[in-house]
Length: 159
Image (cartoon, rainbow, N blue to C red; front, side, top):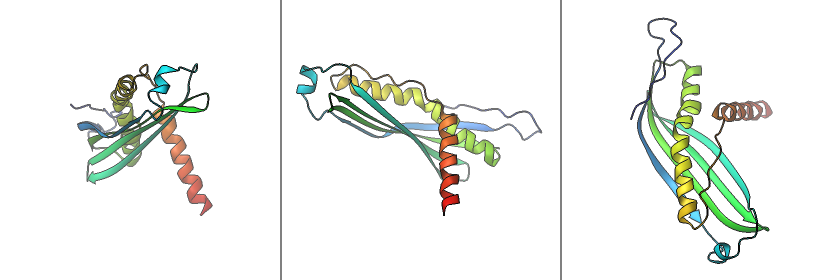
C-alpha cells in the first residue's frame, strides 16, 4: 500500500514522495476490570477520556517508523468501565522532502492516514469487550504537532 504526497511544483526535484511500506498493531490492550458487573448494571452515560500521541523514529536515511498511540479510559459513576491502549504503527519512506516538509509528512500526514485503521481497532476492541463500539471523532494532527512543538520549545527555553 503506498500513498504519494506531491510538492508545490517549485523546481524539478520538489515533488515529495510518501510511501507506506507497512502498517500494523504494535501493541493493544483492553481491560474490563469490573466485568461482568460493568456489563450487567449500566450506570448512565460514561465519562470518556481519550489521549492521543504520535511518535516517530528514523530507521534508515529515508525510512521512519510512525506510531499513533491512543489511550481510552471510561468511567461510570466514578467506577472504571474499560480501558483501551493502542499503539498503531507504520513504516514509511519519505523522499525529496526538506526538513519542514518531512516533519509535516511524518507527524501529520502519516497519522492522518493511519487514524481510520486505528479507530476501527479501538471500535472492534470495545465491541468485543461487550460495550457499544467506541467511535473516536476525527483528530486534527496538524494542531497536535503544533502543540507538541510548542511544548518542546518551552522545555528548551526552560533549561
